[in-house]
Length: 460
Image (cartoon, rainbow, N blue to C red; front, side, top):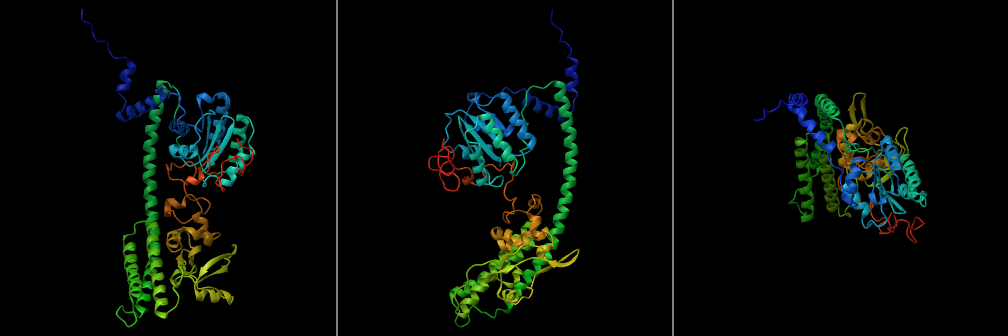
């Protein structure tokens, strides 16, 4: 007798009635939760994959160095701190050549990387998370300790001083979970996703409105700069065909004219506040070309390339550095034009560039964060932090949220570069991770970490 197909179980019928989106999320969660464990391996890719999911990795062949209980305790300690510390415990025979550089590249996350290899220990970190000097001293302080004590002491001391945040990928793996839990989790994810989408759209609209307002405020100041440069060109009284003009003078003049036209074009095309940086950088190039032209016509030595006058870039390239102390701030050297250098030497106030604010006219460095891109184009990233430290603009640019609103590239204010936990891939300074375990390329001196005659004593 032919068998009659049995009705689908009630649980299956219920599952089939779920919305398509919920089923898709459920399938993804289930695949992750019930996937078989990866086979043990000591390759860098396998270690990196494990560290992206959890801060502590113990190679199966090195289980005798750190017990499962101690590894779990160390994992909990790091995760509770919210800091990007990565710890790998490997067997003594693991290859050490380029270990830290390769591990950092494969993991792709900014942070502090510590490796216990047999009875040896070493560490490296992105400089935005922890300085090389700090890492070196921390490693030295725990040499000779047992694995559990060493890793715990090192971690505790590092957590007290390091920067950054834990990567969001930690805790993304897990063991088996009941079907009910999976369905509940999937439903929460779907509902949360809809709420998050609404909030993100609202936040994005608010952010875009703020960006447009900031750009319009910058547009006023930049248009003044472009106009001032155009007036300089009009006053120049130079003609390429005039007596005494040579090819070098004509080239200077042409570069200045090109800078004027390009600055206008860049400003017309600007869509975000950070786009203004290209405008002011171009104007700075144009003014330097005019300074060269002036020197050639007067028969003077060509000027060295210097930043513009700090007090007002419209004054042109600086000619010297002068001591200046902002109200309530610390003294620092700033590049100044000849006229402002004379004013300061005579005890008078410099001619400061002021801009409109809600509180009236203020010096640009006390007018809010919107002027960061404007100043960044004139002064570049290298010298700007030292010029602005202690000012309202400098303080604003030191915050992690600044780059999201006004762009990056204005120098290291203590929070520059990728922060700990950021997925930066291979974008890191190889000098931060070079050498290790006697392979050379260590900190500062270029020697190995703790090798014979090295900087750190002890020797592995």
